[in-house]
Length: 230
Image (tube, rainbow, N blue to C red; front, side):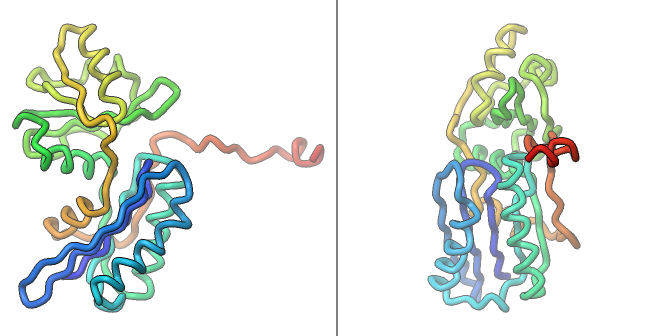
């Protein structure tokens, strides 16, 4: 099974490839933190890991991408690339929301204390992207676009940890309700290497990848009157 995974949903652009040859499993990965420029960076990363691995594009069995939430444009970049590559390689598609990828990363880093935990990402405008996970990083709720105070009301009593860029705000809101939540891994981002691992572990594939947008885009089309004034 050869799996190519792509993530451009948030503040890191990453690509990863898992290959199996005669039972030997190898992982090739590239990742770069960036605020913008994912579209220009992604395919060179893919070319690098394919050349390093020696694998042919035609040998890909599965292509995975994060589907969001995240940057409106960023989410579309990885999905569009995965769709295009799947068309020319006949590989199957796999998708995961970005918070679940982050949850698996946090679990593998052993920061969740073997208890339920939350992934909270700063969604701006006073809101969070929230996912709730059990001790094995299995999703129990979300992804949601939610205010911190409302998010705190959803936290199970056994939850003691939140990770992600919005974890501190969630912990503050939880504290106001008498809950103790430790905020950790503020710099945590989705990563294609973890996405590839999830795609390898799970047998399901999808016929099409669709972006998960929890809010409308910031850009708005001009009205006819506005267009005439330009």
